[in-house]
Amino acid sequence: MVTKTAGGNNAFHNFHNDFAHIEDPNERRRLALAEIDKAPFGWYHVRAVLVAGTGFFTDSYDIFCVSLLTIMLGIVYKHDNKGALTTPQDTAIKLSTSAGTVIGQFGFGALADIVGRKKMYGLELILIIVATLAQSLVGPGPGTSVVGLIIFWRVLMGIGIGGDYPLSSIITSEFATTKWRGAMMGAVFSMQGFGQLAGALVMLILTAGFKDSLSGAKDYASCSGTCQVAIDKMWRALIGLGIVPAAIALYYRLTIPETPRYTFDVARDVEKANADVNTYISGKRGEGHPDEMEAAAARRASATALEVPKASFSDFFRFYGKIKNGKILFGTAMSWLLLDVAFYGLGLNASTVLGAIGYASGSNVYHQLYNLAAGNCILVCAGAIPGYWLAVATLDTIGRRPLQLIGFVFLTILFLIWGFAYEHISSHGMLAIYILIQLFFNWGPNSTTFIVPGECFPTRYRSTSHGISAGSGKIGSIIAQGAIAPLRTRGAAPGAKGAAANPWLNHVMQIFSAFMFCGIFTTLLIPETKRRTLEDLANDWDMGGESITGAPVVENKASEHGSDEIVAERK
Image 1 (cartoon, rainbow, N blue to C red):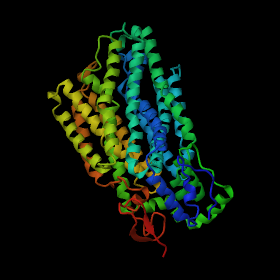
Image 2 (cartoon, helix red, strand yellow):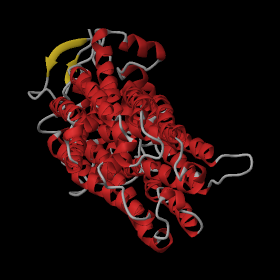
Image 3 (cartoon, helix red, strand yellow):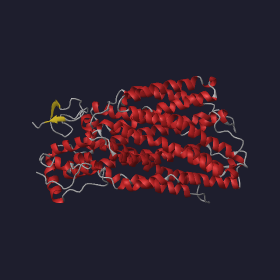
Image 4 (cartoon, rainbow, N blue to C red):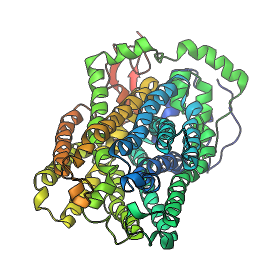
C-alpha cells in the first residue's frame, strides 16, 4: 500500500489517498486518469484554457498583422516603387512565418513526445518574444536590407509559433474533462479571433494617434517627411506590442506540471503522475511532489509492470505503416492542408480583399489606413469571432466530424459563387460572402482540424502526430501564398488600384473552391471524438494485438457510453 498524504478538504479533495491502497500501477493509472476525465468543470480548467489561449492570442496577432506590416514597410522603404513592396518581397515576408511555423510544428511536436510536454512548453514563447522584439528594432544599413532582416526574424518567430500548436493542443486535451474537452480546446483556439481583432484595434489606435502626421499625404507614394517617420513608428509599435500577452503567459507556462498521461504512459512514473493529478485537480499551480523514496521504488516496479508500449522511430513507422492507422493521420494532415490553402490565402490577404470591396480607399493616407484597420475589425467581429464561439458551443453536442464536413460543403459553395459570379456581385455582396466564408471557416474545419489531432492519437505519438498534421496545414499556407494568391495580380496594369489591381481574384476563388471540395473526402477518414476519453479513442487504432496499455486485448467494453476504459487482461 502506498503511504497516504496529508491534506484535503471540501474544496480541495485529496484524490491521491483514494487510490493509495491500489498496488497495481496499471489500475492506479486507470483510476487517476478517470478523475481527470470525469472531473466537473472548474477554475483549474479555466486556468488551463487561459494559459494556452494567451499563446494563441499572441500567435494570431503576430501572424495576421503581417498584411498590415507589408503595407507600412512599403510606405517607409519603397518610395522607388510608389510606396509599395514588390510582389516577391510581399510574398517572401508572408511566406517566412509559415516556413518557420512548419519547422516548429514538426520539431516541437516530436520533442514534446521525446522529452515531455513541460520541458518544451514555454520555450516556444521565449523564442516568439525574442524574435518579435528583434523585428520591431531592425533597420536598414549599407550592407543589409530591412526586408531581409524582417524575413530572418519572422522565420524564427514562426518556429516558436509552430511549437505552440501541438503543445497547447495536447496539453489542453490531456488535462481536459471528457465531457467538455472540445469546448476547452475550441476556447483555446478561439483566442485566434481575439488576436486578429487586437491587431486591427492597435492599428486603429496608432493611426488615430498619428492623424496629423498622416493627413498631409494624399497617397502612399507621397508619404514622406513627418508622414514617413510616423509610419515607421507605427509598424514598429504594432509588431512590438505583440510581446505583451506572451510575457504575461510565460510564467504560467514555465510552471505547469507535466501532463499525467505523459508521466504515466511515456515517462512511466506512476507516483509523480498521481501527485500531478492531485495538484491539478485541487487548482494549485506547479507540479505535485511525491515522496522521493516511494517514487523511486515505484519507478523500478512500474518499469516492467506498467504496460505501455515505448515510443521509438521503428515503432512509429510500424504503427503508422498499418492502413487503419495511417489513413487517420493522412485524414487529419490532408484536411488541415486543404483548409489552410484557402484560409491563409484569403486571411493573410484581407487587406487586398478590403481594397477590392472599397474598404481601403480614402482621400489621404490617414483615411486609407484608418479604413483598412476599421474594415479588418468589422470582418473579424462579423465573421471570425462568432464562428469560433459557435464552434465552442457545438463541438461537444454536434461533434467534430459533422461540423468539419458541413463547413467544407458550405465553403465549397461560397467560393464557387464568389468565383463564378464575381462580375455580378456588388462590393457589399462580396463583403457578405467574405464574412460568411470566415464564419464557416471557424465554425467548422479551422477549429476541428486543430482539435481532432490533439485527441485521437495515442499518448506516445500524440504531439508528433499533431505536429505532422499542423505542419501539413502550414505547407498548405505556403502553397497558397507562394503559388496561388500571387495569381490575383495577373494581368493588372501598372499602378492599378482597388479591384483593377486584382483582375484574377475570381479565378483564385475558384481554385480555393476545388480545395474545399477535396476536404469533404478527407474528412471521412477522421474519427468522431466527441465525449470519448483519450484512452477509449486510442482503441480505435490497430494496436497489433495490444491494448492501449500494451496488454493483450480482451474485448470487454467497461463503459456503457464507450468512454471510460477498455479492460485488458494478460494471457
